Length: 394
Image (cartoon, rainbow, N blue to C red):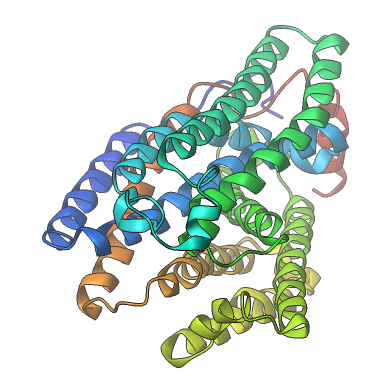
């Protein structure tokens, strides 16, 4: 085992290449959206939700692994930490979203006369929206800062105090994360249709974001598994464990989706039904069916098989499918909220260009952060068990 050579990886010019490609795609998105600010900001919201979701999903998974203490998380811990350190990228990405509020949220422009919107004005107003967004990011930055700071200190020397701190912060941090993500989901997505509400919506979006992060982590681990020291410690058993966790999040997301639909269908209230009517008619009904088949049924079936989870090629295909379907799910959540139709070519182009462009910038910064710390936390108390596990499985 090349644990003594556990240094930060050198990934060469990859960060700059991803960032450059992302910048080019974003410029192309600006060109495609020129003259139609409404279509541009709708597609930008989808891109923002996808990559913010991956970032905060990494934060949630990192806190879960500190609480559970399982050896399954050892090989992905530094990937998760690098993911949390991309918060500056998505925080800056929130600025265009705030600038485009009047094109996205019907309650944002002044001079409202709708009684339903006026009744919610104390909460749904631009200054308070901005303050809440700053608060969410401040909470996430604080959690990520201390978890990464203590992880660096752990690299300099093992200390039970550090492990206790990370576990204690993760316990309270998950509660704070759930609180902030619930209201972020209300602000960023549910308030697109201020006359509709769902008490399960925040949890649904939170699980979807964590699912996207888990899928990306599996893909990145496969990419890094050929490099030392991960090549000496990552086994097919690790991918089986991660595949089982991916299956758990797929099932949980599907359960919450079905629960929300069943409750609204059973209540049959005029305030709630239109949300699903807009998403189950015409082309959006086809998209909804695709989500059922490709975001739940197919990944669920494939991940039940042990040999699929243990093979890097097959589990990468499943994880990539889940990540792509997360983008489609964001489209299904956001776009039907707007009744006016956009030119198909423009909207499709923007939904491809903007998430890809923002993703390029995100990946560039993520890979740069990945190079800042060794790929394995050598002083983690679970490392010895992980090494023994690798030896037992060849």
